[in-house]
Length: 321
Ligand code: NAD
Image 1 (cartoon, helix red, strand yellow):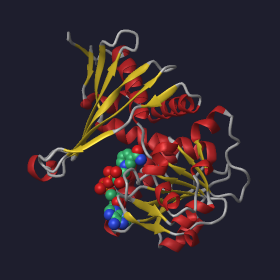
Image 2 (tube, rainbow, N blue to C red):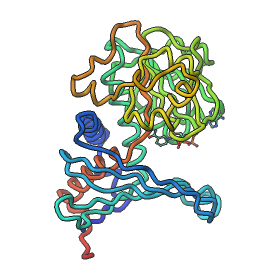
Image 3 (tube, rainbow, N blue to C red):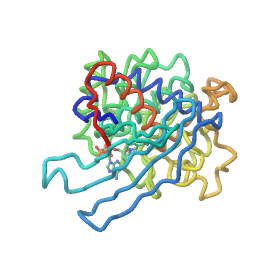
């Protein structure tokens, strides 16, 4: 069995590697060749932690396993550790023997950014030039960096409930050579692509803040009750997702589904667009919305790449189990 420690991940896996791995596994999901297992998520009654497992099997990618981890809210203040902690475990699908254990913290950010980047690549207008951001926390920086590679963006505009956090994303844009401007919510009408990546439980982005032809990547809502976008905007958009079962239960679409403004049958898998079995964007004026809920197979796909790279570069540690 191989171990790839968290400290090695940054030097091993590129944004392009993560993009390819996530694009391929979304395609495999839509083709019925990869599936996610039911998610387990428990409040363990210790340290106020939420702990759980997200697993699956990707037959074409030969990845079987799970991501174990969760949220320990006191880590930072008590121990100087990050609050989100996770580890990916891979098993040999032919034998069931453990194959690898991979640090999952940076990997989570890379696979989440890759998901919205894949959606932008396949659904945004080719002439998109202005990228809008709603959110400026940890994930937002990764989201922005990956999105900037998908179109010839010449401006980033951003809004955040806590404006003092906006320098986090301004720095990323400027390092990539693209000017950044803070805007109010109506100012987001200038954007051709908007990423939402907040931990909000009430909508900020309303229908009147979004121009026709925009692509929205809604990435923050990954739990029942969270919400970033006006349900009327969701219902008015062509909705795509990583996994329909999650989109309707824990994704951004949960609210429009609950109010009856959107039907499950209205939601398409992004993998179908990748596979060419769904046409994707219908025209230049359609608003497309990717409901990125985050599936275990994304973690497994990127972790499997990491293991190959770590072995090739001699940084994987071999242990007997
Ligand atoms: P963070 O704590 O670093 O940043 C939180 C962001 O949300 C900040 O921009 C903050 O200003 C904003 N925010 C907080 N409360 C808000 C409110 N009431 N209204 C509007 N904005 C508010 O968090 P993060 O690590 O960047 O994660 C952001 C979100 O992404 C979380 O909800 C997290 O669960 C989710 N996430 C999703 C996936 C996925 O696969 N879809 C993966 C990882 C994280």
